[in-house]
Image (cartoon, rainbow, N blue to C red; front, top):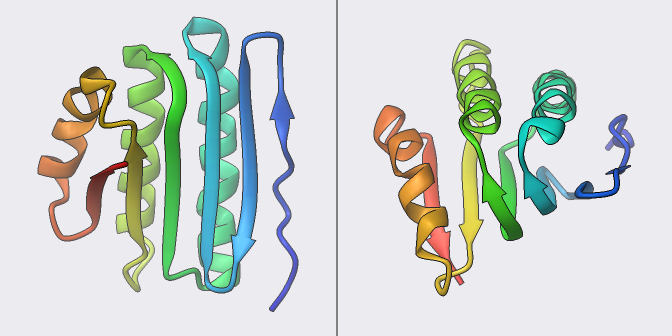
Length: 125
């Protein structure tokens, strides 16, 4: 399998760390998903969308357990990613991993799961 063409992103308050695990891409988000994080996350999601197609990935997992805030602009980046992946043909599953102790995470993502129930899932850990 080809190597991943998206890199880690680290700012003062936000981080994105990818890991390619076979035919699955795991992306760990850390810090604060505020306005400063919205543009880097949006651009990153577009890059990941290309990687899904290029590598024929079966799944993308966003681990947000270490994310302590997520604003609507960051949610919009996820919505655009889901819409883009949906339009690419073969279905790539999208999984969000949340911290069960942080109830806001699941509540914030619930609309994404309802938007594409066969494609998007949320798992508490």
